[in-house]
Image 1 (cartoon, rainbow, N blue to C red):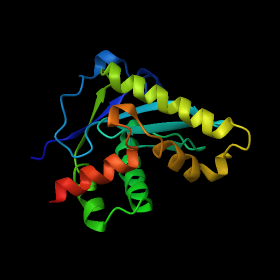
Image 2 (image 1 turned 90 degrees about the horizontal axis):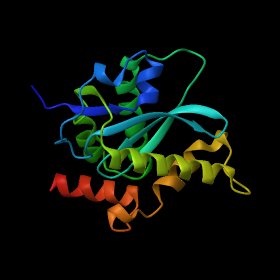
Image 3 (image 1 turned 90 degrees about the vertical axis):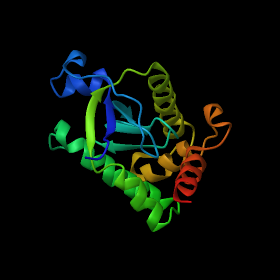
Length: 176
């Protein structure tokens, strides 16, 4: 049985799905290429979104809430779909995309417990707010541009690499 990748849900996500943090265990360390993923429910522009973030490269993307109610069991599919689209858009090779998605074949839902990941997640939420609200900011209709801008910001914890650069480097090195 493959080792799962852990989707670490914040209190906002758990509450939205009627769960309490004590209902789930914290995630153990990940062996997947991009690490575990943190999921939070946050405002993006004038909408609410589920924001996914890799705990290893801080690669991130939001999935906007629609009119239909989503369930917790929908989140792994959203993660797989969003990651596939994002990796393809940044020029990852088909084998790199396949490799990253293979790590998501089994996803276990846990509670978020890493303060460091939650702090980075909060910083990324602030980045989206800034990118979308600055003068001449990006409207919600062009969300893919906002995703690119946020993932192209250099991060101190990545030795000033961007999330895109760190992700492609990690996928390249794991393919060798």
